[in-house]
Image (cartoon, rainbow, N blue to C red):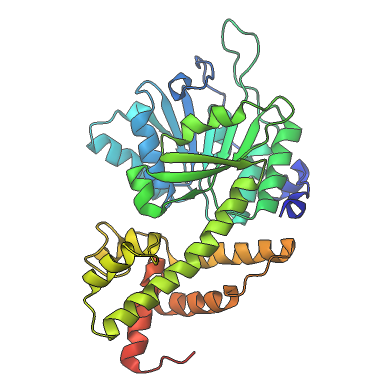
Length: 369
């Protein structure tokens, strides 16, 4: 895997992927200095308010000091408007959140910028927009005469090669820092701030303390941070994990379907599995049967979770990484075909809807593939 992520991604190449005009925004003054504690940060940026990013940004805003500012941006303006309206409705102060007009504006104004985007093309486009032209330095923090370095934390699930190329572009064009920190735990974990983050960041060339700088920030949105290694290593861990998730989700649906067809009570079956060697996240936290996992998408007609299309995307990234590294994934093609059929049938539902797809095929009597 390491050999597969050595390609450099030049700033010029990133700039070609950016789109839209750049907004010239002057950075605010009065920032506090960086430190290992999150409370020392004054201006935060968040780009991408989708199914995962939205609750993550909510938890971030709730836990940073009230005097700090969160600058948000999403291509869907209704998402940013909703974010502010919900904050106001909960008694929040409008001045605590600022809606930016572009990803570039977020980066110009913020010391820490968190990105949560769906696809590699989206991440490349956003950073192409951010990095060209070169970002202005943040104002110096008295009594120091030097400007603080920005910290980019990309929580998107993309391929390690693209992420490492973006990291190289950031580090070669500025003193700023870029880390990959994809997460596991799904929408349920994002809402509850119980995510596990897989961190990829360098520790050489004077960056030995970078993991210590990143960890307390991520802990505002999750419960565990695992430093996997240098740039791209967080994503390598994420793809291995999500490949296992793609397979175990199907196996959970098939096992529940089998047990129920054999006359077992689904609640008792799930209790047995979750106390036995077959237990996994899909059986315990995200069970596909209603009435077993409180808060799971199955309780809401499979709405509000990790959609089938994103699972297909992650599976495809894992398969690409496997080809590049020479790893054999024997079940990958079968799983890929199944998720394609499920997406065609069920659309934008949580990927645990595999169970309903199987159940319908039982009823139709067409169990052959």
